[in-house]
Image 1 (cartoon, rainbow, N blue to C red):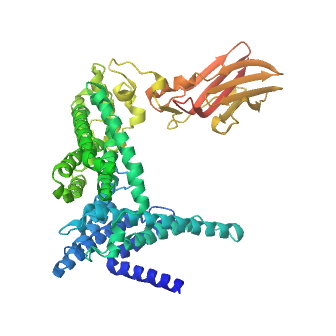
Image 2: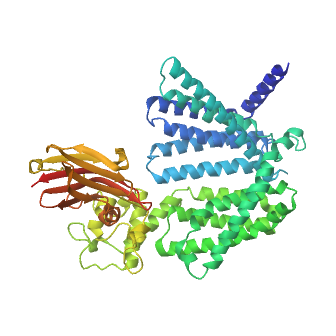
Image 3: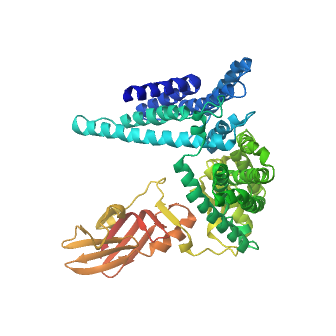
Length: 592
């Protein structure tokens, strides 16, 4: 009897969700199918179709909520609404077909922001022309999201275990089986579960089902009241203390808080809305006074980011920080002083999100245009000679070199160096920057205000490699032995790794232990020469100033005595501030 009741309940729940969100689930299923096709073909052939289907599913889910909510009585608007949503999804699919989604940052960021904006719309839409509070719809969203994710994860673990067991005991199966299982579970099954947990907002608000869906569960209440609120308060106090201590100088220059602002504002507002249902005294105090802390941090960081934008130009990251600053300031003012209008706070975020994806004014387009203007204000076509190199009589100031290296690095990251018309054709930022401009492509990071290079240990990472674009000829007849080795695959021990050489009773011992790297040539247990290569730990930072791909001469190092000459050629080498040192080498030995 119990099993029958459980089955009937599940059947009723699934029938209801397919009845409420038919078009959304249709496109969710299409997204899963397109993803499975891409996995089966082992390429991204149908990835754009999958993304467009996912976008359509989210748009139709929003449409279904609108129809069962404030448009329930206006049946003539239903068909035009869903037709418009379908056209929007189709237009975005056409847009995706014109872009390289994995390479083009404009389309990638625009897609991510659009999904985020639509998700916020999905949560906030039921509050329009209704008595539902945003805190109620947010709780329902979070509860349904995490419960569906938990079930999906457990489900996938079980399916993966079954597939793995079958592959081990009976016959091997391809990796794509696991991908297909993940696609069905996370792209179709999980969204169905999620939508089934969203309450019917057109129903009675006082019904038991609605209260169950929109009231905080015990676990969520404990998590918010006893963990998130105290941590957020401590974090806020630290930020305000930092601003207060450095208000006269460093705060306006280092912008350390800038990367945190978006996540901090998001978590702050989510926590504010989730604490509205709490009856605990200290949580009520938090809900009353936290907006003022959020306002102080948002105002000061927005001012700091504005100053930095004037100094170095906008980037898409700073564009979003400024947008979130506007959202935080306006949202906090409404939440603190006009609480009866707090329903519009999420719609402010939706409006700003839509602005940031519109052509011409989207984040990446604005960032690229700003950085191109910054560079063109310093350099133009007349400053280059016939070889495309900056003329020797051009004397850049420290500020100019910071701006040029900063702007071109950003344009390289956004695949937009081609927008700078006077740059050489097919400009290679990493390998041509030093030659064209005459200074380090990372000047804005590596040099101080006096134009002096910072302590190499202050840099986090460095990498160099032998330039493979030019064929390399080594006259091996001039050498007795040639050895190739990579430290990645050596036994990292001070005892060394021994290589038997062509010379009788002669060995090359390679010592490699992270920051220690050395060569020891031994004949009949007698050391002929020691070549300590640990100096490369610092040398690599200096080498990388000229670019990552270097010439044979730049990457060759020789040690010799009366008996032997040994040359180490770096094929690839990397290091970081922890002392890690690893790479591949060619060793040339010549006995005298």
